[in-house]
Figure 1 (cartoon, one colour):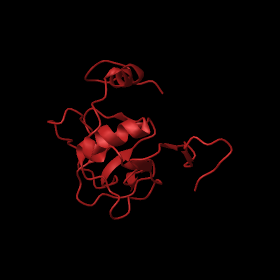
Figure 2 (cartoon, helix red, strand yellow; figure 1 turned 90 degrees about the vertical axis):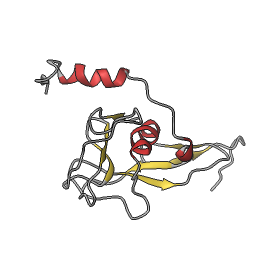
Figure 3 (cartoon, one colour; figure 1 turned 120 degrees about the vertical axis):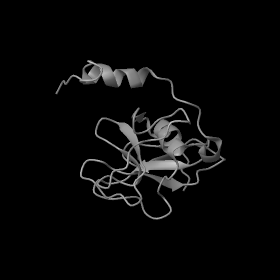
Figure 4 (cartoon, rainbow, N blue to C red; figure 1 turned 45 degrees about the vertical axis):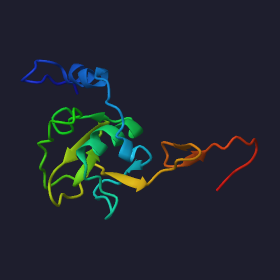
Length: 150
């Protein structure tokens, strides 16, 4: 449903288009080999998989998952802090149905019916490349035809 923003006067499709045109910053070196995934709605990330760093959420995970950082609640400039502090949304990094990513500063947070958490899945790999598929599968390319690797 098309809506107009009362502050900017832009329609929601034009407003979202502004964020799509904004170039994404470089990936943070300390988390460049990390893997991320969208969790299930009504849940939060398990202990040890919560993204508690705003730049890791809004830049690195956003780039890897092709999500657009929300300008107010997921700034990417490195100096602005997210103002999100919502007890009814997942703690840390989460997404919405419009493929936007947000960073929630709330100390506890909660699962939400339309906001899946964005969680860390592994420390990644410095060797051969891995491709994460939309259905959750993983493809592994090592350069040998008709050969599968576990």
